[in-house]
Image (cartoon, rainbow, N blue to C red; front, side, top):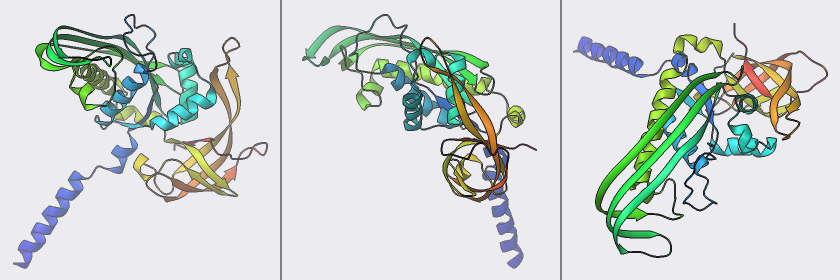
Length: 317
């Protein structure tokens, strides 16, 4: 009886080990940020101008990429804050060089930029009820089409490592919700169930699948290192904005790079690159889910101090 219990425990332990992702696999996930897409090429603008279609599609893509289990995504609030601080315009969002500069500030491996080339919704039929808001219930013949292009930019080299597109089209005739005019509520149940919402999801899923397939393989992941921003510093104590969930481990070494200047486009004033200087080497002494507490090992440059928002890159052996 005792031997049987021991055997069962051994089998259970083996199952747990096999089912638990290895730390090495977690470390190999790429850190990625998705910028709001440019919708400047859409010809048929039937929605309210206050609706940011590019941002809505970027949010949908973030959700789709998270499902691929290959990427770690930066939160939308952090991206919006950096865009506002650096005064990046729409033109900067679709340029690989300026996008790489944003990526360096965010501390990501890759930045995804893109453009919406088609976002069309057409319907015909008899509406049973309608109003000024443009929503009606009736027999509708509906065609919705969404086309988006996306590029993945290596933030270290400004190289476009993948260029993909996604297309979605839905056609049907049924008794259901018809949407027209300026009604575009990304994330709402009504929108997701509409033909346009379904077409958008199809296009976004295609882009996510293609980006996941074209991203460098796990064997190539060693060329990239963990990166994070300095969230807090006092004396020799430094706290980074990445932690256990990002693959950081006690003992990891990081090089802190201080942003000493920005390269601006003389015509637009947009930041197209950043100039950094290595300031110090730090070692992780404690790891929490979203942060890493570090101690300074040595200083490289006495002209600069470690400051909040500096970028820390993992020192590779």
